[in-house]
Image 1 (cartoon, helix red, strand yellow):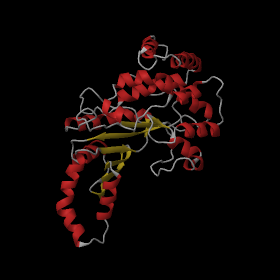
Image 2: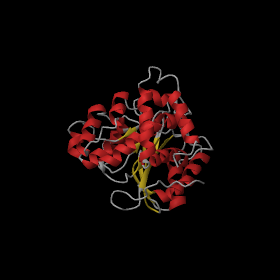
Image 3: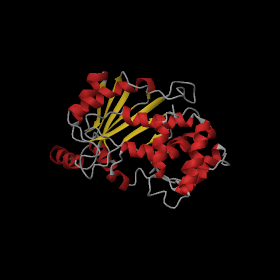
Image 4: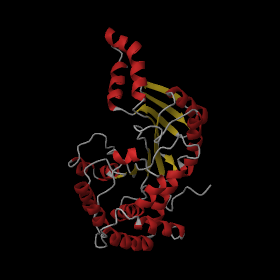
Length: 332
């Protein structure tokens, strides 16, 4: 197996970089997933309510397993309170199992890990394999299954220069990554992983653009006042300057953390040849390009020219350029 380590292995605090993983799926009862986690990594199962569980004290930290719907979470929390009225007990006994089954047809279960040191990422592969064997379903199983895999790698540092390098690298490589991922059409139609508009991409790619961290955040918020981007930067920018972000975007789901929130990948968990090392290997190309300033500058210049072509969005020429670039081995 090729190395899954990025070029920079320390985070902004000088500690080993970590990555948090979020896996959306259906088709496997929560008890089976919890059993797989404890069998592989140990730990104790804690049930918050029937839609949310935690496994604590494992060899990889804590895991959360939840049905990914805020409405169901609120209902589960209400019914888990100690003082229940008789009507609630009746609903819980007879109605909630049916509600849960109905919800699972449209709402994914989600496994969320603690930040895991990147050099331990391969230890998650057996969990995915176990879920596959149990019949887990992913993005492509049904039209309404727009399920995804989210990766949350630590940033190497918090400087505007480094963050800008990553944004530029991601923009340059996006078409290649999207093609390699074969992003399901249901996910491209959903609002959650919308790509950045060309006006913002041009703004970021401009060689003269050398922002302070404050300007970088302000410009991002001006163009992208939303979580719904394939690379969501709001958690990182909220970690750096939470008030600046909250003043522009009112969304309680924004959780400040020093990570990129990479939301693009499919969750192809029902493909026996797929595991999380594949989308991570594609993200690593962004890491490598971000650390190669000379190559990045050259690619930014070429991409800027491409964006100005009238047929750029339909002729696939930039993807051909990226395919040749990746085959050349220059991004190693």
